[in-house]
Image 1 (spheres, rainbow over the protein chains, first blue to last red):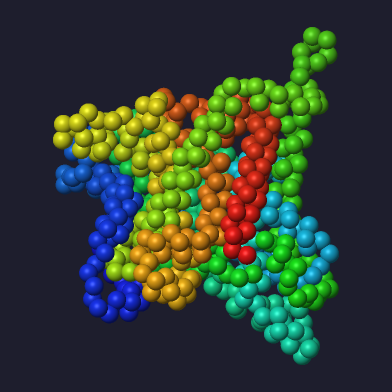
Image 2: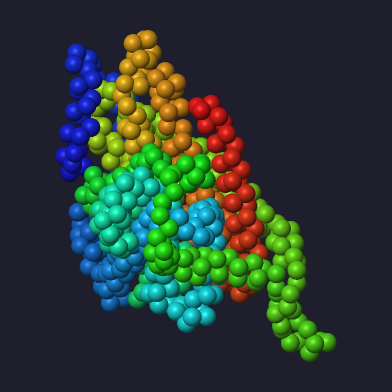
Length: 299
Length: 308
C-alpha cells in the first residue's frame, strides 16, 4: 500500500545512526506494534471487503473474503441513487461544515490567541479564565440550550445552526495563545513599534508568519472535530438535504432496521466516507505540529 | 501552570483598542454560544411547567427552585447512566492511555521494523468519525454478520455475544479505545521525540535496558504530556454519546437512558421536557468540571512536585 511508501525515511534514518553495529531487529516491540496496527486496521479492512457484497451476500457469506458477483457496483450505484443522490449531498455538506467551520475557527482563535499572548489589557485574565472553563465544560451539554437559542433566532435547520457553534473553540484559543507566546518575538514587536509601525500592521507582518505552522495543526484538529461531530447537527438539522455524512448514515442505519436491504448500502457509505479523510491524513501528516497538543511548546 | 507563565512573561504593550478588536469575534461568539447557553440552561433548570389556576388546567412555566435537580438525582435511570458512564470511563481512559503510551514507547525504541506502517495504521482510526466507527464495530458485533463470530465458529469455539448485557459496556468501550488510542499515541510519541537523545545515553552507559530507560527516564520526562492527554481523554469520555446511541438500533441491551447524554437527549427532544434536560445537563457539566479540576490538581501536584 501507499502507507509504507509514504515516509519511511524520516523515522528510519536516526535509528540506523544509533546502531552502527547492525544489531538484530527487536522482534518483541515490532510484533506488538504490528498487533496494534492489525487491531486498528482490521475493522476498516472488513468494511472494504463487506462493501463488495450485495444485500443477499452480506449476511450469508464468510465475512473476511471479498465477493466478485457485482455486489460492489450494485452498492455504489444504489447508494448514489438512494433518494435522488442524497449521499453525495451529505458528503458535500460535511465538507462545507468542516471546511468553512475550521477555517473560520482558526481565524478567530488565532486573533484571540495573539491578543491574549501579546497584549496587556483590562479584562484579559477574566476572558482567559472563561476560556479555560470553556475547555473543561463538555461542549455537548450546551447543545440543548444552543438549540433553543437557534430556534429563538430562527436559525434551526439552517447551515448556520451547525457552523456558528463550531467556530468557537475554547481549546483552539487556548492552544493559539500558548503558541503565540512561544513563537512571536517580543523584541521584533518592540523594534517595529519604535519604527512607528501600526499595531495591525505588526500583527500581520510580525505576528502572523511564525504562527502559520500552529494554525495548520489547529486547522486539521478542528476539521476533524467538526467532520466527526454528530450530536450538534443531529439536534439542529431536520432536513435530510442538509445532513452531514455522520447524521445521514446514522438515519440510514435506523431505516435499515426495517429494510435490511439498506445495510449493504450503509456499509458502502461507511467505506466511502472513510476514504477521503484517510487520504487527507496520509497527505497532511507531515504538517502537524502535535507538540502543540502535548504541551511541548514552551509558553 | 497557566497563571505562572502569564506572570513570568515580560509585560507587553497595552496597544490601545487593538487587543479588543482582535478579541472581538472570539468574545462575541464565546458569549453567544458558551455563556448565554450556560446561563439559559441554569435558568431553565430552575423552572418547570405546572398546571395552575385552580384545576382549569392552564400550564404555565414557573419557578420551582431545585425541584428538577431533586427529581434528576432521584431518577434511577439517570443515576444508573451516570454510574455506567463512570465505569465506562474507568475502563476506557486507563486502557486507551496505557495502550497509547505503550505504542509510543515501542515506536521510540531503536531497531524496530515496519515502524511507519505501524504508526500510520494505529493512527488511522482517528480519521474515522465516532458514528462511522460505531457502525463499523456494530457490524462486527452483530451476530448475523460478525466475522469474529465466524472465526470462532470456524475453529469450533462457542461464538461470543458482544451485545449481551454483561459484555456490551466493554464492547462500547472497545470502540472508544479503538478511536482514541492512535491520536494519543501520536501526541505522546511527539513528546518523546522532543526529548534530547543525550538524556538516554547516560542511562545506556550505566547498562540500563530499553525497558528500564522507558520506565525510569522516558515516562517521567513526558509526564506533563501524559497528564494533558489524560485530562482530555477524561473529558471526552464523560461526554460519551455517539457510540452507544449508534449501537442502540442494533440491540435491545443499550437502553434509551444508557448514558446521561442519552437521557438528556430523550428528555429534551422526545419527551419535550426541556427543564429536566437542563437540570441533567447542569449536573453533568458540574460533575465533569469537578472531576477534571480534582484530577488536574492531584496529578499536577504529584507530577510536578517530584521534578521541581
